[in-house]
Structure formats: C-alpha cells, structure tokens
Image (cartoon, rainbow, N blue to C red; front, side, top):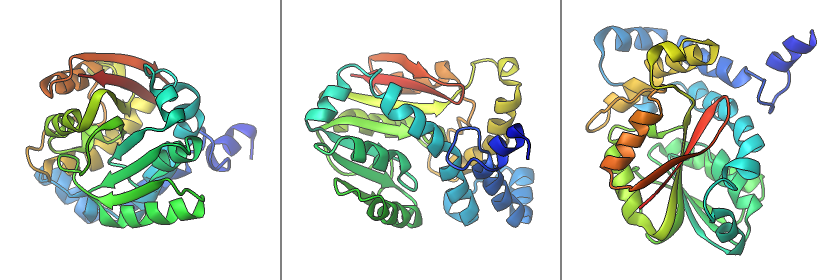
Length: 266
C-alpha cells in the first residue's frame, strides 16, 4: 500500500482511517431492500432496525476524532469546565452509543462521575462491556430517552454527533437545561456543516449527506415530532433549536474539519 492508501485502509484508530465508514456502508448493503424502501416511501426507520455494522461502524468512524480532540481542545475550550472535571463533577453523556466519549472522559477525570444514556439497549450493553475492558470504574450506563433521562444537578451534559438524529431535539435540549445545575454547561458536538447547501458540497459533506439520507433523517422521523435536522443542519439551525429550548448563551467553542463544538448555558 502507498502511504496514502495505508492511511485510509490500515491505520485503525487514526482520524484518516475510513474503515468505520466502510463498515457502516456494509450495514446498509446488508439491508439494501429496507434502505431502498425507506428512501422511496419517506417513512421513518428506527435506529434499532439497522444492521449491527451501522452501530460499530459509527463508533469506529467518530472515536478517533474524539480521542484526538475531546480532552486536548474541546473540553478546555468550555468555560471553567475542565477545572470542575478535575475537582469532581457530575456529567451526563446523552445518546452515548457504544460509550466511546463517555469512557474517554471518565478515564481522564477519575474524580468525576459519568452517566451514559442511550435509547438503544444493545448499545448500552456494549458500552458497559467497553467500560470494563478499558478499566473504567467511574462511569455507568443506562437505557433512557434523551427527553427523559434521569438525574439532576449535572455540571456538564454532552451530546456527541446525535442531536440531529433525535426526533425532538428541542424537547431533549429543554430536558437537558432543566437537568443542569445553575452554572452548568451543555456541550453539543455536531458534524461540521455550513448553513448553506452550496457550502456543504465537498467530499466530507457528501459523506455526511449520505449518512443523513440513509440513517439520520429516517431515525428522527421514526420518533415523536420527527424534526429531521439531518447531519448537515448547520450552526444557525442548531443554535435555533437551543434557543427554543431556553438556552440564553450559545457560542462555537471549538471546531475541527469533522465537527463543530457548541457550548450552551442558561
């Protein structure tokens, strides 16, 4: 393999590696007839109806970016959050999937307590197994909806690449605002997208639009409200959702070619 080919096909765990994306595509081909029918009909498709390769592929696709940026730049970019985590904070990771972001934070901040929530029970089971494998002892995982997860007085609540998949992102954000303690922060990590369609017509945008069409929009449509933001919603649309939920201050705290990181406070 050339160095360029190796970066794409062989460097597992690095941001250049696309094996997670390929695995997620395998999941769509495995259920090709269903994907085609959903596209033609416009009906919703619950997350639970996707092939397991979709879940593990998504995990492999996003985790390298989290490993490279979450601890080194995203959390430090939030106002006062890193110091809270070092001292001991209460954190919720909503829509945590297989737990990559939850476990990364838990290992880095042993004085804090982390709670991962997802509405997909098989993902929660896998997240628990991943925590055991990684030796994480300060994180726990439970099956719960984004608009009804338990607990209160969280110092930090996060959603990683999942707000746009939710049927009722405004309702989820309202519940998050109510679950935060005074002075708490809501970190929203979303796929990098411009507000205008034409500005998203590039290679990465094409990948996200493909995922959006086959996975994100049908997943949202299968839930209550079904706002269907899609993976390329853009900062203005996400900001509008957060304002509707009652957050007064919203800013872009950090960004990478893959993601935008917004911090919302009451």
